[in-house]
Amino acid sequence: MHTQVDSAREYPSPMGPLASLKWSQRFLEQTPGDEVSDGPSRQVPGACWSKVTPFAAPNPTIHLWSENIAETLGLSRGEDEVLAGGSVVEGMQPYAQRYGGHQFGNWAGQLGDGRAITLGEVLTPTGVLELQLKGAGHTPYSRFADGKAVLRSSIREFLCSEAMHHLGVPTTRALSLATTGESIVRDVMYNGNPSEEPGAVVCRVAPSFLRFGSFQIHSSTGDKETLKTLVEHTVTTHFPSHSCADDDGLIAWLSHIAEETALMVSHWMRVGFVHGVMNTDNMSIHSLTIDYGPYGWLEDYNPGWTPNTTDSSTRRYRYGQQPQIAAWNLARLLEAMVPLMETPERLHDVLTAYTDSFDHHHNKMWADKLGLDTFLETDEELIRNLNSLLQEVETDMTIFFRLLSSIESPDISALQSAFYDESTIPIQAWNDWLEAWWNRVDGQPNRERMLQANPKYVLRNWMAQLAIDAAEKGDYSVCESLLKLLENPYDEQPGHELEWFQKRPEWARHRIGCSMLSCSS
Ligand code: AMP
Ligand code: MG
Image (tube, rainbow, N blue to C red):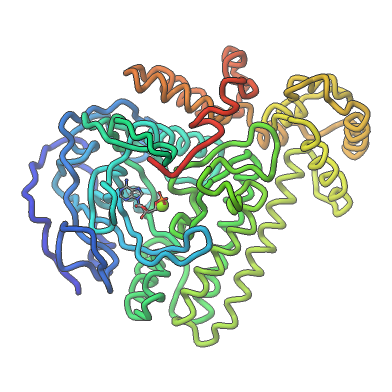
């Protein structure tokens, strides 16, 4: 199945900054691919990828640019016609990846990049980085859909990737957001109300976009050879200090992934992020937050909350269940590795590594959030009580922990603005808890730790929506301000408090895009 066939279309090769990057094609060279380029939606057994041609945007215009990741790549802004799709430069070989996945707990078979097209891999001084367009058109994995993305969901992906990065949460990155000049029809809430929306393309960046489902698809069809080839490629390219030559090597590598996944999820819990669609095709092998869709941020602290209305009946992917779901997903990845193991029972050790690692990170997270120098077993009760108090009346998670970080005495009145209805605050219960915490830290919480663990600014759902509302009218200034604000989420930035260090406004409580999101994008 190895093939070197180039895409059918001849591309122009503009000589800009993109062409001067060091392009490589290790994934295409080292794993088997589709014999046919482009073509209709179809099953592609035995392949890891299909070469495809990005759709040519009729009016490509870059509106948002992340200087931060551009610097890492050594790029300057421009080449809209490449980053919005349709044109490639020398060195790029666009392809769509094939993968499968468990969606909402059920095996869904082949999925693949239905609307993501990798342009190529770039060799940088710090490792390989893949550039991928999201929304640049149909691929063999698009199933019944168009492969396009709308401005609304592209802004959400762009802003959240960059916000997460600056919060210190492992994530894929966003380099650019361009509009295509096309109108796309979407039925936002799947309720028979389709409308036209502007089309957009985000260029995102990560070491690779390999997912748990990239491996699952091969073992699901008993294709041990392709599975082995893909694992070898992944380990040698992205985990060079690991080996997959025997059980010991595989267990060490998978345990590393388990531990990094535990770290990623503990960061989500720390900042109040809810992914919303933790299907196994949305779990990065690099333990990066990936595929920003109907995600959301806790405003009032409610572990049962999920932003994804598609998941409203079981709330499988609710905030409080994310650690367990990550373990479930990891178990599916481990099952996929069984054919490569002499003694597959040993894979259980990897799940134990996940649990141990999550417990460790989670305890450290609470210690940091509460300014404890070390976590003691006796702190568990303090944290349990805090968790139930936070749920007693509507309490803003971000504001609560941020104000707690600089409180001067154990008195809840200093935290009043974290409550949605100040008349309902259970004052005595809170003061009892604060007293217990204050005693625990001898009146001297480690404030430095707290201020680094409790961000002042996160991408609240309504903030992203305000940026979208303006951008849909052609005004990208709110997007730009948020991008800048969220580059320093732990800084006080007093000039921005009134606007963005605020509880969810009433208009956002039941608004689509704020409290309700779907997978439509
Ligand atoms: P997601 O829920 O975004 O993880 O997507 C699940 C699968 O559907 C992935 O294989 C996506 O590539 C695919 N998909 C989502 N939206 C589209 C679209 N507009 N066109 C084609 N494929 C899509
Ligand atoms: Mg996905």
